[in-house]
Length: 381
Image: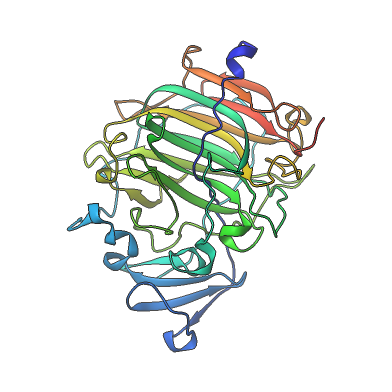
């Protein structure tokens, strides 16, 4: 693909996020914790060995349902159908062990909500918005301009270094957009290190969205709208396993797709275990479909491009397998609810916002999807 086209890659992303797993679960009764909760009765409190605390709340009383557009909303517990996948052999010679979400195991009829992931708690005071004054940002990835009804992607899980006292962010992300300029609806998911949101420098899984008319950026349960249905995993979950330089590699599959019947936008893992969905009524421009998708690495924050925030593994893409991060098996969902590989050069572009900080290498289009190596240390080469 021509260099001029590769340099078109758009950095825009108004939100970022991250997944994690946790072992060692302990339980508390409500009386054991005096934290003031922004919702009603909690049926169980679960504390993981890593220190994360989850409140198990009635699925019908979750904070998201207080959104004005969700009055009288009837929760959909499962997608009406799952997209049809491509039955192909992987074209990359290497494979990674699969990271799965933690088993939090809230009671039937409840969903787990990460304690520091709720509007009104200390962790939600500063969600960075791309385009805000004083916010630096950079990206390296693949973009597609065309009809998008969903996507699937396999993300190589690394833990990029981000200063724990900073408001910077490093993420591997996928998002789907529709709209023009400021009036753009966006939905996305991925893995992220975001100390000012999560309170630590762990890699976590997050979901996020933007309502184009209100221009409001939301992540996880920081504001109302995303309907969670899983009782076993939740946005903000910490990942137990990360890849090691010249060592074992870990990856996770993320799927975002539009339900062909209800028109809700679902998020699932690689085994089609639903996390939840964005109700279609939240959006104006994504009501029918997306017209843009991005997959790749993003860094942002007040000092993101001046303090060497790592992207991916923190190594340049040319270093290859077990050293650079991989994002691959990228497919888009078409109007027939089937995953296909995007092959139209007029709709595809790949590149980096600053090749001295972050690079892309070995971009490829195969029968199992798009793929590339990407990342960098955030230092001038």
